[in-house]
Length: 169
Image (cartoon, rainbow, N blue to C red; front, side, top):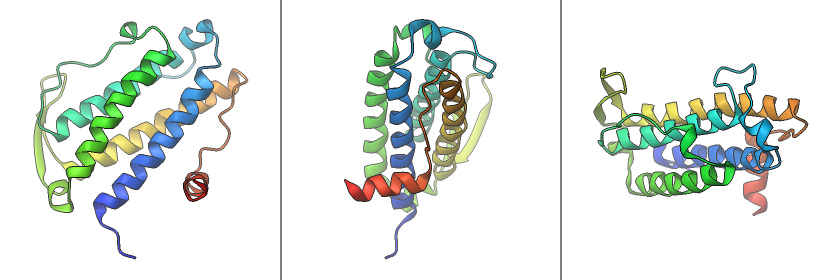
């Protein structure tokens, strides 16, 4: 069965959300101290890493639809993991609506945007989506390591397990 690029991107976005949700469930079991304490990883705390990931998803979506990105989301704006989860649910809904309306022609179009440092860029929409996917993968791996060190391993987050779970549903 032939699939479109859009179908493939939706599937990979589903995988990204699947892995994110497993991590969020594990993060919910952390103490507030573990959630907010600095780690040896680049974005410091679990909280800051999650907000960075959410902020990037938010910014990538805005770029896809041609909206300005006025800075990023701040960790101080989120009291706990539930607040992050709630904001991500909204962002995921917006991204899914975008993907539902996109076709391969739209995904091949170039979009112009200015980043938070005022630098202007042109990117193909599909490349913005691939960046969203791989950016998330990097930070999911970091969070998985932090959670494992805190005694809350998320277990395997492999694509094959996502496919198994998807077909079992």
